[in-house]
Length: 85
Image (cartoon, rainbow, N blue to C red):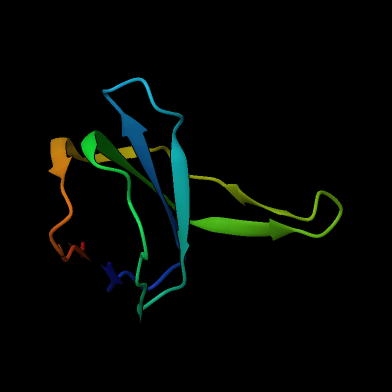
């Protein structure tokens, strides 16, 4: 996954197969290598425009979510994804 966006982002994988959702934090303009994404169908949702809240010790995203891709199938093969504006 290559985040070419100038801000940090959170990419969430929402399973169509009933598996729990999981998220990947992406630093701005940085690549991220995922060791394992469970095989299945996913919707990819991107949140960006984050602010770090020290009291909560977490990132709070101040912009709305954006569905990047619907019905994406992951298999054991390698795939690449580039996030751009």
